[in-house]
Amino acid sequence: MKAITTGTPTAVPCGRCHRPLRSAASIARGYGRACWTKTRAATQALGLDQYSDRVATKAEELLETPGAIRRLRGLFFQVVGSAGATYITTPDRCGCPAGQRGKHMCNHRVAVRALALSLGLWAPAPPQPRRTFDLAA
Ligand SMILES: [Zn+2]
Ligand SMILES: [Zn+2]
Image (cartoon, rainbow, N blue to C red; front, side, top):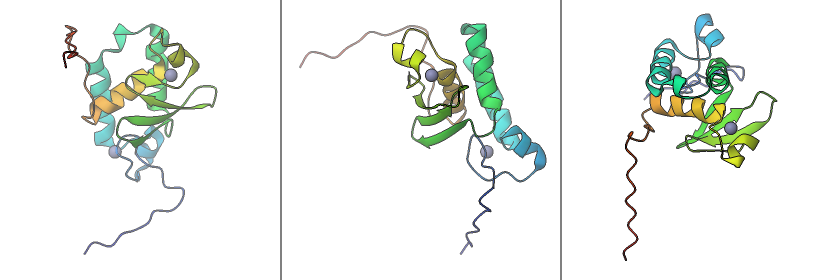
């Protein structure tokens, strides 16, 4: 039986897998080495250049800020916005003012998309939108 060791209250969890980080480099980055590689790869796969420069830069900042994004459960993430407000964000929805207006993709959603993609929880919709609605009942 494996002993469960409880970390110190100040243990910094990995931004992707939530395991406590050990090395100083990982703590400074907010991710374990493997998780950071996967998050970077997912960010590239997502293609930040499809979003505006401002949104892309802020999304990267969010991903690089230790503790700024925390997965709650499933596709629900808690994101700390630049103004210090906390939003509940999924790849398709965000509680921030811009997200609620629903007009533009906010940086919180972009960052959450990258993380969710890296975790294998979400994938971008295929380029061809399929509009098949099964309404016949
Ligand atoms: Zn990790
Ligand atoms: Zn948002």
